Image (cartoon, rainbow, N blue to C red):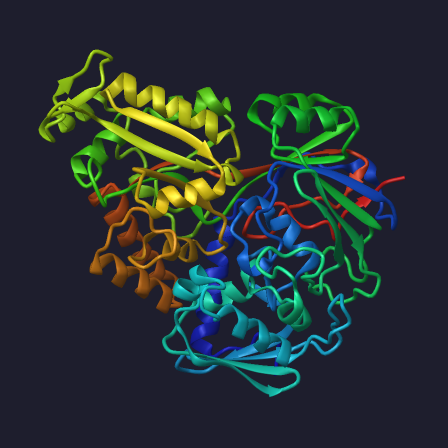
Length: 550
C-alpha cells in the first residue's frame, strides 16, 4: 500500500481541496527567534497560558486554547501538512473504497504508549469502541461519528484496521487528524480513575509524558526518551529537545505579559491587543500571530423562545452593532472582522456577505417597531406589553478568552445606545452555564471553533441534533445541506453547498452575529527556538520542536 493512496476521483478531490486550503491559509506571521541559533537538546521551559483545560482527555477536547497541550502527550492517526492535506502520523497510509464507505488504514508497528502498552490495530479499535460508548462523547457520537455503523472498526491484522461507514463522509479523515481522534492507551481506557477528566493516568504516545497537574496553577510534562515516530513533516525526528516543560495557568493578560517581560516565563500565548506593541518593541522578545481555522467567533441567537424567535428582532440586534467600531475599541486594530459563521481563512468562506448587514441603527429601530417593541421604559430600554426587551448571554468562564468579556460589554453598550436592547452579560462557572443552557435560560450563545475543516464546526453548531446547536433552529433544508457538505469530496461542490448554508443562516434567517476571526498570539524570548503554529488550524503547536538557545 502506498502512503495515502486513493481512488483517482478521491485523489483529485483531495488535491484540489489542498490547493484551496493553501490559498486561504491563515499561517502565522511576525518575528522569528533568530538568536536561538541551532536546535539544542536539554533544558526546562516555562510557558504561561491563558486557559486551564477542563479535561486532559483528548477524546473530550473542546477548548481551542488547550490544543497545544493535547499534542504533547497524544497523537492521532493522521496530521495536516502546510497545504492542508493529510499525512501519516501513527498511520502509514490508507485506502478508500470506490463507494467511499470503507477506509483501510495501515499502522506503524514501532510505537509504544507511555505505560508500555503496544500501539496496534487492537488499540485503535479500543479507542473507537470507547468513543461510541453511550454518554462518553455524545457530541462526537452524534455528529462527527454519526456515519459509523454498529460494526465500526475491525482488526484485519495487528497493523491494519478497517473503518466502515454507513454513508460517505469526507470529515472522517479530519476526525482521524483531530485531538478527539487521538489514541489513548487501552490500559488507561480500562483502568483510569477518572477517564473523562484525564491526567497522569491517561496516557498516549506523544513526545512528552504528563506527570504532574496542580489544579489552578500548572501542568508539567517530561520528555519521553523512547519517542521516535514523529510525522514526516515535523520539524525534526527523534525525542523532543526539551527535557521538561511547565505550563502555568495565567488567566489575566496583564499577569501573563508581566511574567514574560520579567523573565518568570519564557513564552506566553494570548498576547492582548493592549500589549502587542510592548512585546514587539522589546528587543529581547518576539511576537508571532496566526488566524485560526474553523468557525468565526459569533453570537448565536436562541430562536426557541422570545424575543429571538422573531427574525426581525434578530436582524435588529445585528443592525444595532457597529462591529468595526466595537472591535477597534476592544482590540485596537488587531482583530479581523467576521462576516459569516465560517472564518475567513477557510476555503468554504463566502465573501459575498461582507458588508451586507450591520451598523444601521435606523433599520434596527424600524424592525423593532414592526415587531411590537415600540415602547420605552424610564431607562430608555424598549418594551412590549410592559415587558422590557432583555436578552441574556451566559459565558462559561473556562471558555472566555481574547478579551471576550470586554467585547461583550462593548456590544452591550452598543445595542443599548442604538436600539434600546437590554443585554445582560453573565460570566459563570461551567456548571452554572451548562445548567442555564439545559434550562433554556439564555438568548445568546457565544462560540468559536478551531476545527481544521469548518464543516465539522458547523455540524456541531447548526445541525438540528448538533451537540452545541444553541440556536434551537431546526430546519430540514439546513440539515440536508449540512449532510451534503459532509458527504461530498468535490471541493467545488462543497464550496457551493457551504455557500448555501451561509446564505440560509447568515442572510435569510440571521441566526447569528459574526464578530471576529479568532487568532492566536505567541510572545517569547528570542532565545527560544522552534515555536510555531499548527498547519491549517493556526493554533499554537506542541513543545516538540522547541529548544532553548545557549
